[in-house]
Image (cartoon, rainbow over all chains, first blue to last red; front, side, top):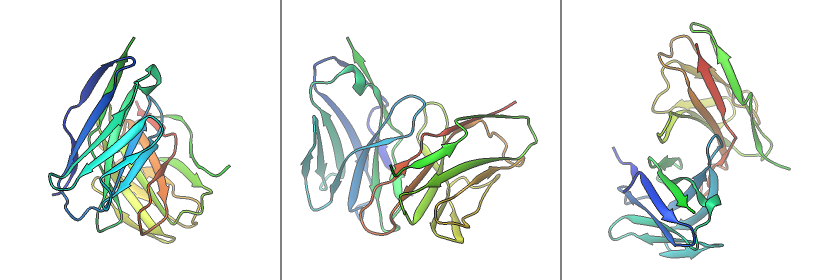
Length: 111
Length: 113
């Protein structure tokens, strides 16, 4: 079946450095993508989204890049802070209007 | 403030007992979802409902049941038929159709002993 996945399960980043979290998707019909952040023991929180007619979208300290040619999505976090330590999930919306979630990348920020 | 509320936050049950997890939203969202999350794992869809009085099985529906009698509420029952019920359960809601993300609750951690 079609699914969303992340390239790496864990990422360790020095505080102050930029983080890049990657995600590969396989459903070429997906037209909407979201990044979520989940802190330990909590529900996922919306970070940023992007529609398939865009290739880049910026938020506060975060940027999402979409490359439809290779079906790749990435989340860039600028000047990573200790509070950015969490699990990050990408999600895609296909024809059935439901989101499909990747397995997640655990980001650990080193002081 | 609008939001989605799951209760209780922690739940302990003896093996063989059914247990019902509550999920309520006041966002006027059409669709609601239940996910299961095991340690270090992603989100697996249990059941979802896109409209009142209708719901569909997700990827891991066996041993679970739901109802959607009101737009605001989507309770999940974990039955004794569920072989490994200990997990973190997440409820979510969204508008239906179009490009909408999900709003998640804070989760219920169920431990069966």
